Every structure is written in C-alpha cells, then in structure tokens.
Amino acid sequence: MTIETATRTGIHRAWWVAAVTALVVIGAGACATTAGLLITPLHHEFGWSRAAIGVAVSVNMALYGLTAPFSAALMDRFGIRRVAVAALLLIAAGAGLTTVVSDSWQLVVGWGLLVGVGCGALAMAFAATVTHRWFVARRGLVTGLLTAASVFGQFAFLPVMSWVIDHFAWRSATVGLALIALATAPLAWSVLRDHPADLGLRPYGATVFEAQPEPEPGAARRAVRLLFDAARTGPFWLLAGTFAICGASTNGIMWTHFAPAAHDHGMPSTMAASLLAVIGVVNVAGTIGSGWLTDRFSPQLLLAAYYVLRGLSLLALPALFGPTVQPAMIGFAVLFGLLDVATVPPTIALCRQVFGAGGAIVFGWVSAAHQVGAGLIAYFGAVARDLLGSYDAVWIGAAALCAAAALMAVAIRRSSGPDRA
Image (cartoon, rainbow, N blue to C red; front, top):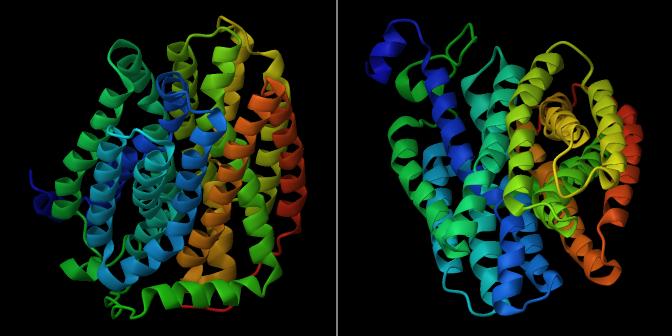
C-alpha cells in the first residue's frame, strides 16, 4: 500500500512524515552517543589523553547545539527534506573520515565538526519544526514520540557498537554509522515534504487549510535576530539555563563518561553499553509520557519535578558502580531513562507559549545552550578523571546543578508572548 493510498483510506500524511522523521533522527542519534565508546580504544591506540579526546567530543556537542537554530531557519528557507538529506550526508562524511585519523586534531574535524553539524541539524529543533508544520492536534504527543526516537537511536545501538568495537575494531563501528546515515538519506528524500500544503492537505487537527509560507530569505540573519529578541526576555535565560543543565546532566556525563566510569569499577564495556541501552529504551516511555503530561499540566512544574528526581538519581550513582550489574543499578537505569529526555516536551511547549511562531528557532538556541552545557561537562569531566582518578565529583556536581535547574524552572513565567516570526 502506497503512502498516498493510505492517506486516502484514513491515515493522515502527517503521521507518515512523523514516522520517517523518527527514522531519520534514530539514524542521526546513533552517532551522538558513540563517542563515549571510542574514548578508551582511541586512548589505547594513539596514547592521546582523555582530555585531548574530550576536545573533539566537546566540539561535537557544542556544534550539535549551535547548529540547531540555523538549521531551523534553513528549513524555513530551503525546506525540511533538503536540509535533512544534507545533514545525513555530512554525518556519513564525518564518520567515514574519522576512520583515517592519525592525530587528535583530525578527530576534531571529522567527529567534532562534520558529525557535530550533521547531528545538530537533525536534533530537537528539527523535530520541533516538523511538529509545528504538520500537527495542530497532538503536538505534545508527537514531540514526545520524536524525542523518544532520537534517544532510542542514541542508546539502542550502543550494545551493538560496543560488540563491534570489542570483536572487530572501533573503525568498523564508525563505518557502520556512516552506512546508516547513507541508507537513511534516500528514504528522507522520498517521503518528507516541507509543508502539508505541498500535497494540498491541512495540518493534522487543523480546521482550515493553511497556505505554505513564502521561503524566508536571510536564514542566518533571521535566526540571529530571533536570538537577540529572545535574549531581551527573562524567560529565555531561564529556559536556556535549565536546558544547559539538562545537557550537562545527560549528554555531557552519561553519553561520554558513564561507560569509562563503569570500566573504572571493573564493569565490561559491553555491559555498561547495555545499561545505557536500557536507559534509551525506557526513554521512549518517559518521553512519550512527558509529552502526554505536557498537553495537560503546567510545563514549569513538570520540569521542576524532573530535575529534582534526576539530581537525586545522579547523587546516588557513585555508590552503585561495581564489576557486575546489581538490581539497584538497573533501578537507576530505569528511573534515569524515564527522566532523561522528559524535559524536552515541556521546554518546547514553553518556547511556543512565550515566543509564538518563532518558537522553533528560539528552541534551537535553547538547545544550543543544552549542548554547550553538555560539551563543558564532557571536557571538564575528562579533566577531573585525569586529575582525580575518579568521576565521583562529576556526578555529585551534576546533581547540585539539577537542584538549581528545578528552582529556575519554577521561576519561568507562563506567557503567550508576542509572535516573533
């Protein structure tokens, strides 16, 4: 049954677009967490310090975030599918180039620059743009689904990649990532469309037909203008601050340092990767559930609750590490999985409420703060491990940051805000 036939028989095309968007972000997400598995083999093969490898990881995470607002603006100018396919090709190129590195600066170029920009273009701002254009009803739910897809890609592939690294080589894993990106690109081109009006459709849940807006010239200029407009408001800085802490307490430490920290305590890397996969699987339920809750309850209060619980879980983590997986560690993985990306739907909802039609691009800037926070703790966590011989201080510091984020979330004012399109 073709997509067009299915649409005529009752399934709105928006759901097909959402499904393929989910596959795209799964493919991109598979690249986002692999860096943590590469630290040890790169350290052993080349003798690079963890801090030197951490530079490439930090650049990747920072560009992942800084690309998002420009990507959202470029989608307004050139269309969703062109930007998505270009990003997938960048990921493939960066992952492929990583296999031939011989110096740490080359790792910064391949993994830090190319993979970082490609993944950033397909990050949460991409999901927010698709949701904003194709859905009027069920936005919170779809946002949760797409965010869950991203996290599923980030974690579900980890045991496979860890097994490949253990039984073959780290280069085989990066080649596999390049092939995933290349295989996803044709699907994105064939199914994604920039706007429902391209097919003569209304967005899902809309009562009136919406004409496709004219392409926005000066995509980069518009993204920067929206940043300057948003930066004059208090809610923006509270949102950016909470999301920077979100990135520090998830991507920055869990993606990059959980597997090495577990290895420090005698746990095999494949077992540590499997725990991260548990987090990724549970994330699906946590993020979808958070989207459902966001449609019904105060986003500010949801954020505060999530950060408090996340901080408590991180505070307990140092005592849970060991050479084997105990029930308490499984409990941590389940709880952290429920909370990990649950912050995304309420944060996107608040960006829409405060900044109107420009909310997707503003959320891109908020996401940039998320990745800057992640990059900083990825680097300084590596430095702390080199200096202290342990990651314990990093987990405790991240828990304290989560407590601050909870207080900041409560302070965000609920507002309709001006339309800043």
